[in-house]
Image (cartoon, rainbow, N blue to C red; front, side, top):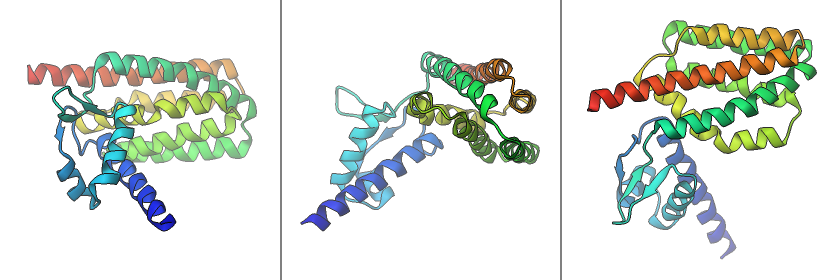
Length: 224
């Protein structure tokens, strides 16, 4: 009996992670109708753990259950992205400020390595890798900040942030200015300039917001 419960929990977690990944990476598109039987076949699991995973994703607002029972992937909206990225800018600004105070020479070297990977993936047109390496750069800044509450709060919106960032990569291109913005953040961290790092990070996040809003507006015009 215990083994059966453990198996169901593991299957639910696999379903949850698999579904969320497909939404974040755009395999399941905004506003797309999804059906339990199709998802069960896609993921190779039974309906019970799938329903549990769906409930979790509904709570996180990646899936939306309509009054008629229809289930769809949450749409991308300008209102949501503005709110998420504004919160993100404040949290990551504070994180960057503390990272600048704590960073060692090895930390600076590692951040520089991430930036080189970001730069190369951008040049080669590897848009999804560009986002992944960008996440690693930001995650490492979180790590060296030494903060717990700010990082925990940031993690609560991170998956939605990733969805919007990958949305830009799927339907458009990032501006080369992102490279300069990353360099400026690293420069301030290297110089242990907490105020400069905080400001540079906030401006970088708000620049990313502008890119996402631009893509959403372009799609709205195309569909209109």
